[in-house]
Image 1: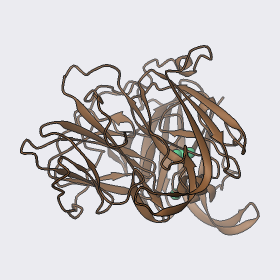
Image 2 (image 1 turned 90 degrees about the vertical axis):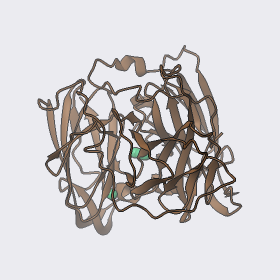
Image 3 (image 1 turned 45 degrees about the vertical axis):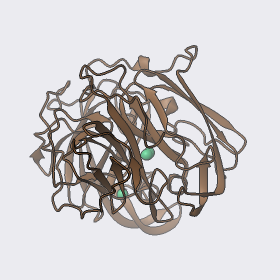
Length: 437
Ligand code: C2O
Ligand code: CU
């Protein structure tokens, strides 16, 4: 099912993001009396297991495998995931990266719940109200547990068939490093997927790594259909340009297969690829193109449902680095506005606020910033305004010396993390919280 989910008809550009347009947050809280549409049990274990290639790895599994099962839902369905910890020391949780679930289901140990100890379980319930590509992972000792394999793909497809009757073949491509070995859906090397000539495929790329992952395509032009689970408005065909996927981020790549039956290669960070088409003819890897697509200018501008020009709050999020002590340990730690977590003041908001945040990186290293519970729209980078499709993110790579202006609507009450998804950085100071008053 990882490589070929039949019947995956997805609307093309079908769901624009509607933050600030009266989204009813109470709808997000799953009514305890409503039966689940999708019910999954995942059992976590610490164990030695084999990757699809046969290589052994000492880590963690969910239902005996890593990545864990692909969780699929249709937009609007109630998803219920029962997490059982059979043997993972230190406790575990599951966080639904990129899906704006209610606070109680966010899965952050020590903030929204206690970690689930060995022999215990926890049930998450949320309505999958956004269609898009997401992933899930443990949020307890995240660096060690995510690296070790407590993760999986989460895909929400739009309901019904699109007006445009053509079928799209959906492919998940979760890229993860196990002990430095790069895998796609737990496999080393190419992942072949049969797609008929003329058919359309959507490859849902998920970058679980700590650095940016370039994705490029040979054999056909492609469209960057979505970033971080949000459709790009009127994406145009791209050729000879890579897409940079932030750590924790996702990119949906859409390809229409050539009529002559020749295959298409979606390169994921290196020579290995998802190979669409006939499995009998595998084209060789091609080098990464020199140019990279810039989401700031890609797609066609559509109006936002709120006005970021008149925000209720303005925040600065200035990342730096300085020597100091963290939990009594001396080191060179990351800072936010000069403070080191846990001494970073919270960002306070009230329900309905339009929030504008300036994120600047004066720390000497790049940071993929991940905001929980919300998506933010990118307004500008280094003073250059966004002119393309509204570019919504939950995972934004902020390069060395860069400054981004982003905006979002505070429409999901709770306490939410805003941290670097280069996970060692998050535990070395680069963590802040957004808190509703
Ligand atoms: Cu994907 Cu706070 O994490
Ligand atoms: Cu970082």
